[in-house]
Length: 108
Length: 118
Image 1 (cartoon, rainbow over the protein chains, first blue to last red):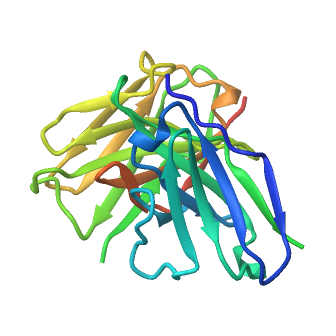
Image 2: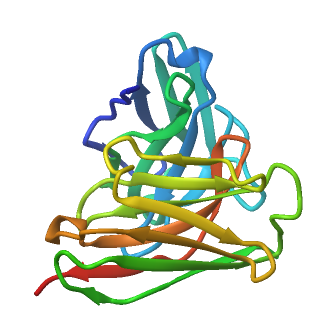
Protein backbone atom coordinates (compact mmCIF):
# COMPACT_ATOMS: atom_id res chain seq x y z
CA UNK A 1 0.00 0.00 0.00
CA UNK A 2 1.14 3.54 -0.76
CA UNK A 3 2.72 5.32 2.22
CA UNK A 4 2.57 9.05 2.93
CA UNK A 5 5.08 10.55 5.38
CA UNK A 6 4.36 13.75 7.29
CA UNK A 7 6.37 15.40 10.09
CA UNK A 8 4.54 15.02 13.41
CA UNK A 9 4.77 18.71 14.17
CA UNK A 10 5.60 22.10 12.68
CA UNK A 11 5.88 25.35 14.61
CA UNK A 12 5.72 28.85 13.21
CA UNK A 13 5.44 32.38 14.55
CA UNK A 14 2.37 34.47 13.76
CA UNK A 15 2.65 36.27 10.45
CA UNK A 16 5.26 33.87 9.11
CA UNK A 17 4.88 31.15 6.49
CA UNK A 18 4.30 27.53 7.45
CA UNK A 19 5.32 24.68 5.18
CA UNK A 20 4.01 21.20 5.87
CA UNK A 21 5.44 18.40 3.78
CA UNK A 22 4.00 15.10 2.62
CA UNK A 23 6.43 12.55 1.22
CA UNK A 24 5.66 9.61 -1.01
CA UNK A 25 7.20 7.61 -3.82
CA UNK A 26 6.77 9.67 -7.01
CA UNK A 27 4.03 11.66 -5.32
CA UNK A 28 4.54 14.33 -7.98
CA UNK A 29 2.64 12.08 -10.36
CA UNK A 30 -0.41 12.01 -8.10
CA UNK A 31 -3.02 14.56 -7.07
CA UNK A 32 -2.52 15.58 -3.44
CA UNK A 33 -5.25 16.89 -1.18
CA UNK A 34 -4.90 18.62 2.19
CA UNK A 35 -7.30 18.75 5.12
CA UNK A 36 -7.34 21.00 8.16
CA UNK A 37 -8.77 19.61 11.39
CA UNK A 38 -9.19 21.93 14.32
CA UNK A 39 -9.59 20.35 17.78
CA UNK A 40 -12.97 18.73 18.22
CA UNK A 41 -14.06 19.44 14.65
CA UNK A 42 -14.45 17.48 11.45
CA UNK A 43 -11.74 17.76 8.78
CA UNK A 44 -12.10 20.48 6.16
CA UNK A 45 -10.61 20.31 2.67
CA UNK A 46 -8.28 23.29 2.22
CA UNK A 47 -6.34 22.34 -0.93
CA UNK A 48 -7.21 19.78 -3.61
CA UNK A 49 -5.45 18.58 -6.72
CA UNK A 50 -2.10 19.86 -5.44
CA UNK A 51 -2.88 23.57 -5.49
CA UNK A 52 -6.61 24.31 -5.96
CA UNK A 53 -8.69 25.84 -3.17
CA UNK A 54 -12.35 25.07 -2.43
CA UNK A 55 -14.72 27.97 -2.21
CA UNK A 56 -14.29 29.86 1.05
CA UNK A 57 -10.70 28.84 1.71
CA UNK A 58 -8.38 31.88 1.99
CA UNK A 59 -5.71 32.50 -0.62
CA UNK A 60 -3.16 32.14 2.19
CA UNK A 61 -3.47 28.38 1.68
CA UNK A 62 -1.60 27.00 -1.31
CA UNK A 63 0.19 23.87 -2.34
CA UNK A 64 2.93 22.45 -4.48
CA UNK A 65 3.86 18.95 -5.57
CA UNK A 66 6.97 17.65 -7.27
CA UNK A 67 9.10 14.52 -7.36
CA UNK A 68 8.72 12.82 -3.97
CA UNK A 69 7.35 15.71 -1.88
CA UNK A 70 4.12 17.67 -1.74
CA UNK A 71 3.91 20.81 0.39
CA UNK A 72 1.06 22.72 1.98
CA UNK A 73 2.00 26.38 2.31
CA UNK A 74 0.20 28.66 4.72
CA UNK A 75 1.24 32.28 4.49
CA UNK A 76 0.67 34.97 7.13
CA UNK A 77 -0.10 32.33 9.73
CA UNK A 78 -2.59 33.27 12.44
CA UNK A 79 -3.62 31.66 15.70
CA UNK A 80 -6.74 30.28 14.02
CA UNK A 81 -4.58 28.16 11.71
CA UNK A 82 -3.42 26.03 14.63
CA UNK A 83 -4.72 22.56 13.77
CA UNK A 84 -3.82 19.13 12.51
CA UNK A 85 -3.20 18.90 8.79
CA UNK A 86 -3.52 15.69 6.77
CA UNK A 87 -2.43 14.96 3.22
CA UNK A 88 -4.25 12.40 1.08
CA UNK A 89 -3.78 10.78 -2.31
CA UNK A 90 -5.44 8.04 -4.33
CA UNK A 91 -3.41 4.85 -4.44
CA UNK A 92 -3.94 3.79 -8.05
CA UNK A 93 -2.41 0.36 -7.52
CA UNK A 94 -4.95 -0.65 -4.89
CA UNK A 95 -7.61 1.82 -6.09
CA UNK A 96 -8.39 3.44 -2.77
CA UNK A 97 -7.58 6.63 -0.85
CA UNK A 98 -4.66 6.92 1.55
CA UNK A 99 -4.11 9.48 4.32
CA UNK A 100 -0.88 10.67 5.86
CA UNK A 101 -0.43 10.44 9.64
CA UNK A 102 -1.01 14.15 10.09
CA UNK A 103 1.03 17.16 11.19
CA UNK A 104 0.21 19.31 14.18
CA UNK A 105 0.75 22.98 13.36
CA UNK A 106 1.56 25.10 16.39
CA UNK A 107 1.45 28.87 16.20
CA UNK A 108 3.99 30.19 18.66
CA UNK B 1 -26.11 23.24 -0.04
CA UNK B 2 -24.47 19.88 0.59
CA UNK B 3 -24.73 18.32 4.04
CA UNK B 4 -23.96 14.91 5.48
CA UNK B 5 -24.81 13.60 8.93
CA UNK B 6 -23.81 10.40 10.66
CA UNK B 7 -26.06 8.52 13.06
CA UNK B 8 -25.73 5.36 15.05
CA UNK B 9 -25.17 3.97 18.53
CA UNK B 10 -22.81 5.81 20.83
CA UNK B 11 -21.94 2.60 22.70
CA UNK B 12 -21.49 -0.91 21.36
CA UNK B 13 -20.40 -4.07 23.16
CA UNK B 14 -17.41 -6.11 21.97
CA UNK B 15 -18.24 -8.79 19.37
CA UNK B 16 -21.44 -6.97 18.36
CA UNK B 17 -22.17 -5.52 14.93
CA UNK B 18 -22.02 -1.76 14.49
CA UNK B 19 -24.40 -0.11 12.03
CA UNK B 20 -23.88 3.52 11.03
CA UNK B 21 -26.07 5.60 8.73
CA UNK B 22 -25.03 8.61 6.70
CA UNK B 23 -27.96 10.81 5.66
CA UNK B 24 -27.14 13.45 3.10
CA UNK B 25 -28.74 16.25 1.12
CA UNK B 26 -27.75 18.52 -1.74
CA UNK B 27 -26.74 15.72 -4.10
CA UNK B 28 -28.06 12.35 -5.22
CA UNK B 29 -26.82 8.91 -6.16
CA UNK B 30 -28.97 9.30 -9.25
CA UNK B 31 -26.16 11.44 -10.65
CA UNK B 32 -23.26 9.74 -12.40
CA UNK B 33 -19.96 9.92 -10.57
CA UNK B 34 -21.29 10.37 -7.04
CA UNK B 35 -19.45 8.46 -4.31
CA UNK B 36 -19.76 8.52 -0.53
CA UNK B 37 -17.33 7.00 1.91
CA UNK B 38 -16.57 6.41 5.57
CA UNK B 39 -13.45 7.52 7.41
CA UNK B 40 -12.77 6.98 11.11
CA UNK B 41 -10.45 8.55 13.66
CA UNK B 42 -9.56 6.88 16.96
CA UNK B 43 -9.11 9.36 19.82
CA UNK B 44 -5.87 11.27 19.36
CA UNK B 45 -4.98 9.38 16.19
CA UNK B 46 -4.98 9.89 12.43
CA UNK B 47 -7.72 9.60 9.83
CA UNK B 48 -8.30 6.07 8.56
CA UNK B 49 -10.34 5.40 5.43
CA UNK B 50 -12.79 2.49 5.70
CA UNK B 51 -15.04 2.11 2.66
CA UNK B 52 -16.76 3.91 -0.19
CA UNK B 53 -19.63 3.28 -2.57
CA UNK B 54 -20.23 4.74 -6.02
CA UNK B 55 -23.48 5.71 -7.70
CA UNK B 56 -23.27 2.52 -9.83
CA UNK B 57 -22.94 0.22 -6.75
CA UNK B 58 -19.19 -0.20 -7.20
CA UNK B 59 -17.55 -0.52 -3.77
CA UNK B 60 -14.11 -0.26 -2.23
CA UNK B 61 -12.97 -1.43 1.20
CA UNK B 62 -9.90 -0.90 3.34
CA UNK B 63 -7.77 -4.02 2.82
CA UNK B 64 -7.18 -4.42 6.55
CA UNK B 65 -10.90 -4.34 7.41
CA UNK B 66 -12.65 -5.65 4.32
CA UNK B 67 -13.73 -8.92 5.92
CA UNK B 68 -15.66 -7.00 8.59
CA UNK B 69 -17.21 -4.18 6.55
CA UNK B 70 -20.25 -3.86 4.34
CA UNK B 71 -21.32 -0.60 2.69
CA UNK B 72 -24.70 -0.12 1.04
CA UNK B 73 -26.76 2.77 -0.25
CA UNK B 74 -30.43 3.71 -0.40
CA UNK B 75 -30.82 6.10 -3.30
CA UNK B 76 -34.43 6.97 -2.53
CA UNK B 77 -33.65 7.82 1.10
CA UNK B 78 -30.31 9.57 0.35
CA UNK B 79 -28.50 7.32 2.81
CA UNK B 80 -25.36 5.24 2.99
CA UNK B 81 -25.06 2.51 5.61
CA UNK B 82 -21.86 0.98 6.95
CA UNK B 83 -21.88 -2.19 9.01
CA UNK B 84 -18.87 -3.45 10.91
CA UNK B 85 -18.99 -6.92 12.43
CA UNK B 86 -17.27 -8.28 15.53
CA UNK B 87 -16.28 -4.89 16.97
CA UNK B 88 -13.44 -4.54 19.47
CA UNK B 89 -12.39 -1.71 21.80
CA UNK B 90 -9.78 -0.71 19.21
CA UNK B 91 -12.71 0.24 16.95
CA UNK B 92 -13.56 3.07 19.32
CA UNK B 93 -13.42 6.17 17.13
CA UNK B 94 -15.25 9.08 15.61
CA UNK B 95 -16.77 7.87 12.36
CA UNK B 96 -17.19 10.35 9.51
CA UNK B 97 -18.99 10.06 6.22
CA UNK B 98 -17.86 12.23 3.34
CA UNK B 99 -18.60 13.01 -0.30
CA UNK B 100 -15.89 12.12 -2.78
CA UNK B 101 -15.30 14.62 -5.57
CA UNK B 102 -12.60 13.64 -8.00
CA UNK B 103 -10.23 11.91 -5.59
CA UNK B 104 -10.68 14.26 -2.61
CA UNK B 105 -13.14 14.19 0.28
CA UNK B 106 -14.83 17.46 -0.54
CA UNK B 107 -17.59 17.56 2.10
CA UNK B 108 -17.64 15.90 5.50
CA UNK B 109 -20.23 15.12 8.10
CA UNK B 110 -19.78 16.27 11.68
CA UNK B 111 -18.80 12.79 12.84
CA UNK B 112 -20.25 10.30 15.29
CA UNK B 113 -18.30 9.02 18.29
CA UNK B 114 -18.66 5.29 18.82
CA UNK B 115 -17.29 3.65 21.95
CA UNK B 116 -16.79 -0.10 22.10
CA UNK B 117 -16.92 -1.29 25.67
CA UNK B 118 -18.57 -3.94 27.78
